[in-house]
Length: 259
Image 1 (cartoon, helix red, strand yellow):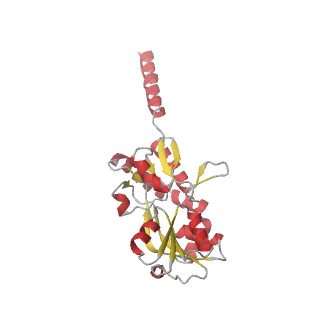
Image 2: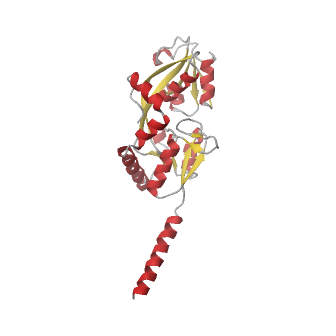
Image 3: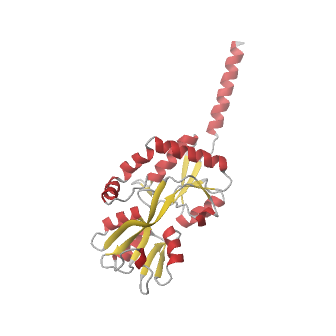
């Protein structure tokens, strides 16, 4: 009897292990060109805040993680066709996107800010929509969406890369670049002599994990993970590791930080 019980236990244990091993990897889509959230390290491996978040989610789910590097405007199509399981890529939860995909609970607060030329007459978002103004945006972002619907008189420069939009401002070819406040802060630090940062968001936004509609059980698992990760100090640790200067600067200016 004891031998049979032992054999059964071994058999069941093997079945559990085989089931765990057979769990498919969690395919997470992100564009690895937005440091410090999505980027590659010196060896070309995925790195950054979102990568760490994806890895922690994988551990919570008991699944390996496969990072899929996809251009930002291709992330939602990749999710809808099943190429990836979710999007963790500094993705703003907007009503427009919510018509195509589902979102987790928000995990980060941000907003649209302005990088302007050092001699630009732009002082706030109210100054953007004027004849002769040139406003740069990155294709597919909420800055692009905002400019497309709100700016009727300014000329838009729609660019594929953040770096290209920054250079348009730094070289005096554009009056402003609409992007999130953290990126604006970092870009101004790289071009201190030719740009100014207007950091206080003129439109507040939240980031969330993008999911396919109908994946309700998966969404509940992700929301549970985000709640536990926040309560355990996970987001604070990521901020201290990747964004210490930014946290200090935002605090000095009285601007609420991301996490």
